[in-house]
Image 1 (cartoon, helix red, strand yellow):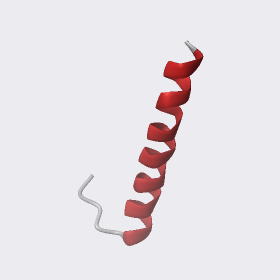
Image 2 (spheres, helix red, strand yellow):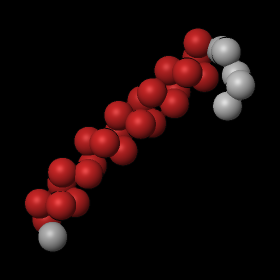
Image 3 (cartoon, helix red, strand yellow):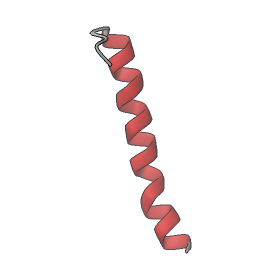
Image 4 (cartoon, helix red, strand yellow):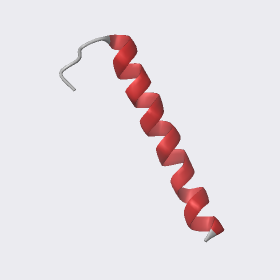
Length: 30
């Protein structure tokens, strides 16, 4: 997690965004 690579940070950010975007769907489909 001590990586300061912009690409790596963007990858993590998009990963987090994608995860957050699926949360409401999962809750709504329950």
